[in-house]
Image (cartoon, rainbow, N blue to C red; front, side, top):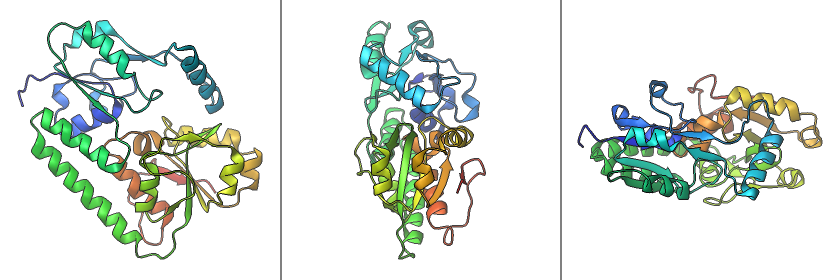
Length: 304
């Protein structure tokens, strides 16, 4: 790859992939939500949120997002002046989720206003292999395919290690992954697959299907033995705070199983390399007798 290739990543997940491939120095633009690895903090931010979530609980955030989508006003915006300033050769974006990042149509509109020629790669993985394929695609585009293949090979080894160890247990507890708490959304796309690899049985949700809202009655009727709070965009501390606001509700009073909170933003929401860490976290949660805890203290905790 030419060392002068300039990469603008409009997704936290592709930012993580680019850095994992050893291309941090080629990153010239990132989003306001890109926060990993820490070394990217000085890179030009080219997007912004149109909704102020500070001080809002999950119910209020959901309402604000629903109103924005209904009105067509959008949730995020590209700062076209900042994007022009970065002068990118390669732009990485997505078509998977309209509430996760700037829309593909916004990217197309902004790119038309740029001078020169830009290559735009869009990603919409719905399963773990799709996530790993994103790494390969970026590797091919940036002439770092050998690094990409090595990263994917290591990921497969780690996945197979979890699958092999979890298969030692005949117990497959019913696990409910909640991607949002009020209203409740079940984890979709790759989350049911992650649960299965870690030795659990998804209480609700279909592999590769999008996350969706459910009534609390359906969550209770699914009889989960374990509930994992993997709230999209929330770290562990924020997730626990949100749960504490809702813990007096009728559902949580009736539920008698185990409850765990995780850093959903880092290990479950973003289709990037740390999804593999998420699988290992689920192994530690679902089968603590098989998996010795090795993950960071701020990755997950047991609530009940």
